[in-house]
Image (cartoon, rainbow, N blue to C red; front, side, top):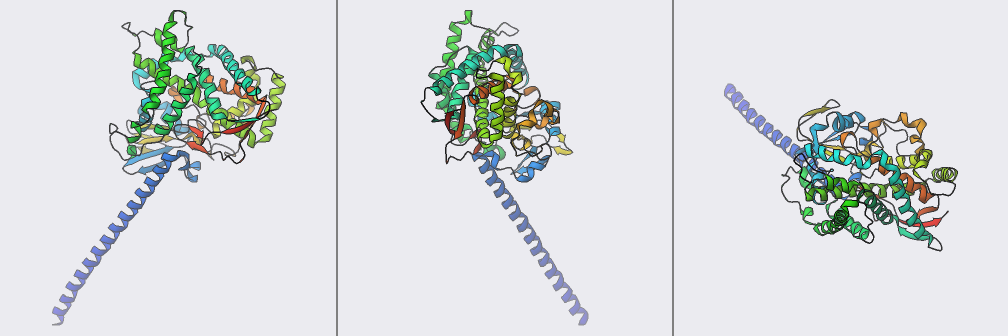
Length: 477
């Protein structure tokens, strides 16, 4: 009886143990599922925030880390956050990384197959064709166009009897749009510049946000709701481009050798001209690249000058000493070292292109981390330019760090406002020249102050603009 009782007790214990194990297993499964649900929900919330303003989602820890793996639902994203990682993705192994589908979908309706988005042989051919348009030998002539346009804007400001207020983001965008049109297309936009400005603002509103569907792993051909909108903006943009192209063709025999002339004169190995759609796409690409970033840089620069009176004082001292009240010319640029340093430091803290996105074609390894094929790569210059490992006092506005005696301290791939490698911005040197000259012209004659009570907030979408524009009080020095 005792033996039978012991056996019965043992069987009971086994059943209870099994039940307990099952309960424990179920509890563990529920805990894992709950953790996954919470993780997925947190990821989704972060992606929604990123759609609204990308720069707000980067945790403080990212500003001191070099590579961050992020599991976004069923996709891997790696935030590459070191000079070595930038060099790997953008330079030494750049062929393994293509433009990300989300970036392409954001820009494709506006830029088509232009330089921003093309890949492979087409990109190589078009880049080779476009390079002469921004060659250093052309910069002195471009400087004359820049200063003439800048003087016209300043003359309009001087018609006001006293201080006046305007949204300088709009003013600077109209100014730089006119400049790039004259430089690259030999065309003065006139009233059409307002149509282009409206078109771009409308396009940013409808297409300027990241796509959540990309991180859900859904195929790129699946329609995105936001891509159905903004067609009117593209139509507006195209009407102005068609106007410029028509004027260029009408004067083709007497057209100077500008970018539009290069496009229209192109012939391939078989003697065929460039497809009209590709001519349009390259015009759109050069137009966007040639005015948006410069306008944004000027806006942020004047914000920084207001917040840092000592920097503004040193800038004024240099302008008064070098220029003596006259308009700057190309020959003055080498002597405007502090002016240029203000531009460089502005681009560090407020890079207009605040993130570069890629997708790995094949597997790779970065900083000891395996990168599976298909992974998304994000290089955020907003974070990299404020990284505690590569910058002293990274959040402080210090133009001195870009003066000639200090440049050697800057890690080349820790500062990428124009990208890096073969795909570095075609108009980098033109953009820096234009920003320096316009900052010098404006700052030597006027002080700009943000409207009282207006909160300046950086908004990271397609580019890094101030949310709600930049209303500023403009007063003579």
